[in-house]
Image 1 (cartoon, helix red, strand yellow):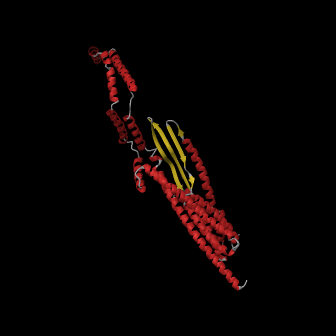
Image 2 (tube, rainbow, N blue to C red):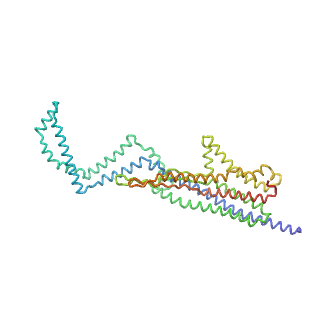
Image 3 (cartoon, helix red, strand yellow):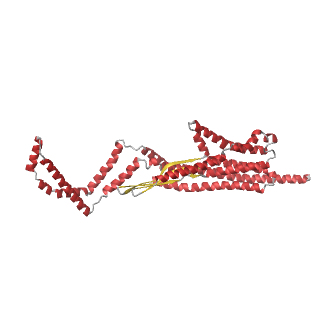
Length: 441
């Protein structure tokens, strides 16, 4: 090759390299934006679900004395105020009252007729025998029964009876039956009502669910868009597999894509545990006491969240596990990616450094990123099966009581991104062994 041809080839290679870097730089920016939006939406989804879980926590709903008091009081109020008796029922009830009055008179007369030993008893017996006509009193029993029935069926008396029943619920609080959840529920409701600009619990639930739908959909869209960017990079490796002069630039840019995948995979939510009572329906006095979407448990965690929780524990074993995950699932992958780039771009002396070569080619057996993927999957399968089993045991369907549970535990987009990072990292490790100018052993 002549000098002119060599110069032309060199210039052509440089131009191709610059175009490749420019294209991948734009694509990297796009992937970075997708990752940033995914991270934001993951946090937003977690915030919305936590607010929903807090306002529908079972302790503030089904386990709240205040909520039961309100519902039962309303039922009692309606039942007493709307109490009606048909003419046939009124006639039968009046006869029963009349018979009870007659029976009471007979019992009183029998008690008086017994032999009396005390002076007072003898005086009472004498007075009744001489001044009271038992038969005449019995004859007035129908009038007594009609008077009692008119009092029972009087609207004013119904209202008084309802007020009396409701006052008993108020007495519960005055005598120590104070619901400890009232203050918590009221303060939490005030904060969330203000935050989402609503005025009622039902309106807040509807707004949270309306916000959650698009957020959940968008997180998956951005996740798949990130995977699409990575597939474009891998496609470029296939297309440019014979262009040795472009391999170093392509590999370094590929590493930057891997770093973005790792960052998003570590910080975005990977698993959500959501167990709730979908419906609790209890029949009281012919009316339904209903509680909807009572959240038993909710947690949404990323890998970094898990590490933070473990390290903040007081138990030494928890701290130790957190440090192991931090070192082998976070720091080792970062060191490995960095070392591969240093090995490929540096001169022989630095590229052949034992530490650099170790992290570039041999640290894979110590990295637990793939182990974390399997561990989270197995945790999800086991936990999901356990929750399904336990929640199924809580389901009750009968005339007087109906309980329906639901398990919304699920893997999140962060898990997909982290799997993609693990697989992508394995592919890059294999590519490095083929393109390295030095000994990879």
